[in-house]
Amino acid sequence: VQTVESGGGLVQPGGSLRLHCAASGFTFSSSNLSWIRQAPGKDLEWLSSINTLGGTAYAASVKGRFTMSRDNDKKTVDLQMTMLKPEDTAVYYCAIGGSLTWRRTGSWGQGTQVTVSS
Image (cartoon, rainbow, N blue to C red; front, side, top):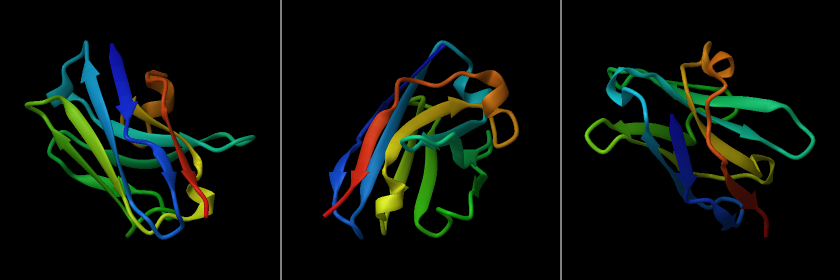
């Protein structure tokens, strides 16, 4: 079971980034997936989830700014991030599981660093 995140980087406040997650080793099309993040000195924070039908849910902190999508043929999940703020600075992870189960699965990759700074 593996998820590999990419697409992070340094961006100015108000800018955009698109994160990408490639998955393998499990039945992707039957799995809910989530994006989570960890800022320095803080706990893991759930951001968004997508279910097997493509339905999405978002944390209040990112709703309206972030959009999650999936491609079952390619076994990938993306997170389009817009209107980025300095407080979005964190390591971002793609996790297996939905909003209530991702922590229990304990399955996510090594993450990709997003830094929002001028």
